[in-house]
Image 1: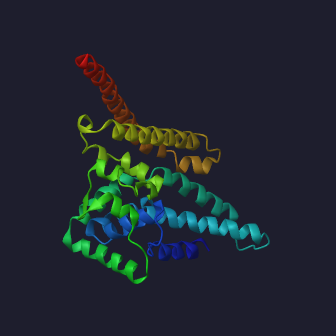
Image 2: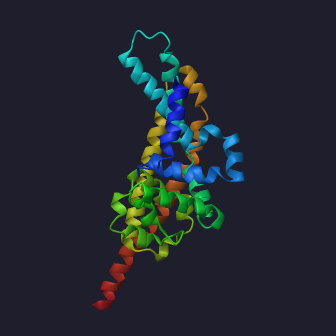
Length: 260
């Protein structure tokens, strides 16, 4: 029964009707899936793809919801459905956003794969759906916009907050930024997002560490190691950004003294 809902979810994912985190990552992953590298990665790391995590969670949740209504249905393995939902919930915490986001951006510059993006846009127009807000905010001519242009776009607040947090704290973005050249307001926004993400990671690590089910705990025992790398990156960037923010105060003071 989980398998039925799992496959149904895959059909829904390809509709690209919504602009939530699941829909955005599905769009990115399905484009990457159509490459040789994507198929190879999918074969080796099937359960790490968001389209699979989402479908697994959807399938398990639907079965558990059904069980709440049909307690007498002996065909439902509620223990397995609960186990499956929990493991995939924990696995979602370790989702490698940077890997898929990086590959998506490479493909946006490839004319061959851009055809698929154009096809998706035409389908949306045919269905009477408006252009995707997140794409309009982030991209211009298939290139990622300057961070200042992205954050100053009046539509940026309509982009899914989870996606924006993962984007603004991504290695793909931040390793391309020179913090010394950024406005104070942009640095403050980045700092807020890194604090938010680091707190989420710490909470996830605690949840994993406190799992009481021994079978699940054994299954997810390596997950904290995956999260540590991202947490270290967050803390590094927080230190760099805060150091730059402190220099703004010093510059303001020095400018004030120069005027006097």
